Amino acid sequence: MSDYKHLFPIFENHKSIIYLDSASTTQKPSCVFDAEKDYYSTCCASYGRGSYDWANKTTKIIDRARENVAQFLGCHSDEVTFTSGATMSLNLVALLWGEANLKDGDEVLYCPQDHDSLNLPWFLLQEKLAARGVRFDLKPYRLTSSGLIDACSILQQVTPRVRLINLTHVHNVAGVVNHIRDLCAHLPETLRINLDCSQSVSSIYLKEAANEADFVSFSGHKMYAANGIGVLSVKRDVQPELTKLFSGGGQFHRSDGGGGLSAFVECGTLNTGGIVSLEAALGFITTIGVQKIYEHKKSISELFMKRVKSMPAIQLLFPESLASRSVCDPIAFNVQGYSSTEIGDYLASVGIFVRHGNHCSGGRDAESSRSNDSVRISFGLYNTESDVENLLEALEALPNKEEELTYHFGT
Image 1 (cartoon, rainbow, N blue to C red):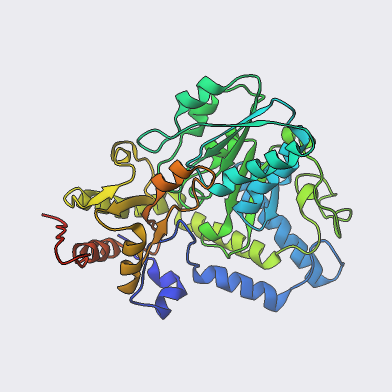
Image 2 (cartoon, rainbow, N blue to C red):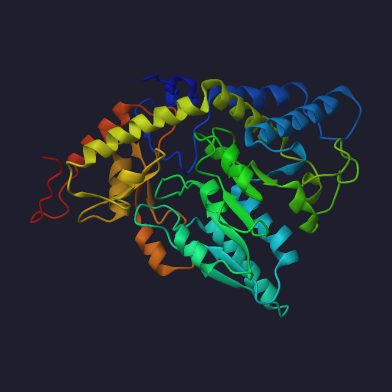
């Protein structure tokens, strides 16, 4: 197995730390830092403003980054806009499209077990429109026992009243990849698909899934780019359905002629440093190879899955995902007799960083929030099989919670 950890400066500064929380945010390779530093130290200026050298270079940098993102997604550059992250992108779908198009009696399908950033904007919009006398319904669908989207649950609810479906490409707790193309083949073409690709963007080819969706969102910080930068992609034929949300400097003097999706979102000074980091991260991923990153993470994931079979105290949140798992992580589990917080705190005390809690899922649904409560591990390119071995050793050495209780890890 290749060792990529040396490409990430943070591990030079923290050699003993094992970071297993990449589904929350990835660490950054040197090339991302170098790209941002180079921009700020050589040609920092505003996009689309000024004819001097630095301004022209900045404009070319952002236009090139937009083209590279479009190529990565398999779409047109005028279908791409930069945001502060997936949360903003997903909120924008509700504000740009939902507010302008949803009418009395319309319906939106969503999964209560999905990330709150995908779902909560629609509850907020529901309250906002209800105050104006417009009432649409949010209809839930569930995941299967393996963590996949329950396609039957969706198809049974699709009627002419359903205007949009929220979907997740890779679930942030179950860690399985949903086959968006197969599902969309059974849906009306007029039904809008809102796809969250936050967990898949760093290690799965997005073009096939993105081609099926009308709206695609992801964050840069989950794919080795800086925090505070993200992408929203909206198909050309859907853009006439959008309403203007922002206005300000630059919207009428753009290098792209003011058209396309960016005209609905980008105004004022853009987060150019973040955009530079995003382009550098894309280059990093494509240079190593998406498939190679996937295989690297999959190998580590399979080692964990193999070992926990002999550790009865560890209970996987989606045990049937072992059979259906077609992506490598995240992996969520609990340890019998301990809360997820206790396990998370214990592991942190021995230098292993994991996520614990409900993972920002099920915020409006108490049952979903409780069912998602767990310890979650997720891998990056910098992780190795020895990281998993150290994690398993730490779990095997977990102190007894009370003297009279004994927990046996392993056989």
